[in-house]
Image 1 (cartoon, one colour):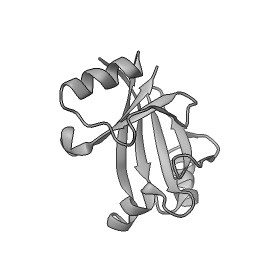
Image 2 (cartoon, rainbow, N blue to C red; image 1 turned 90 degrees about the vertical axis):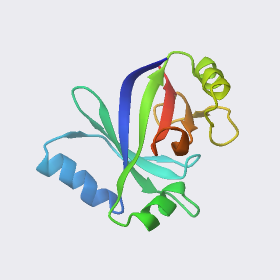
Image 3 (cartoon, rainbow, N blue to C red; image 1 turned 30 degrees about the horizontal axis):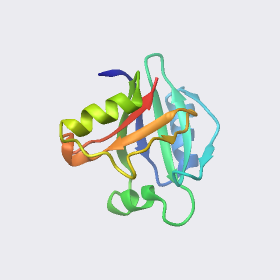
Length: 134
C-alpha cells in the first residue's frame, strides 16, 4: 500500500539556524520558508537525491509543533511521510485493520498541495506517520 518515502520531518527550535546548517555545513539544496497556517507550522524543504527533509517550526499560538519542542527542546524527528496512490482507499484499509487516523479522518491539503492524513504513533511503533496522495 505505501509507496516511496516522501520526506522525514524534523521539528526545529530555530529555523534560521537549521536552514544555515543544512545549506552551509551540509551543502544541501534548501528551499524557501513556507507558512502552513492550516497545520500551524512554517516548513522548509531540503531536497536530497532520493527524498526530502522537512524542517518544521511553530507558526502561531497553539502550533502542534510547539508541544513537541516543549518535550524536546533541541528538536528532533517529528514524523515520516509515505506516498500512497489513493489516500481514501489507504485510510479505509488502515481503519479496517485497527489503525487510528488523527483528526477528523478527512484529508487536509499538505505543504506539497496534495491531500495528507496522519496516523497515530501508538499504532506504528511510536512513529507519527503521514500519508500523502502521490
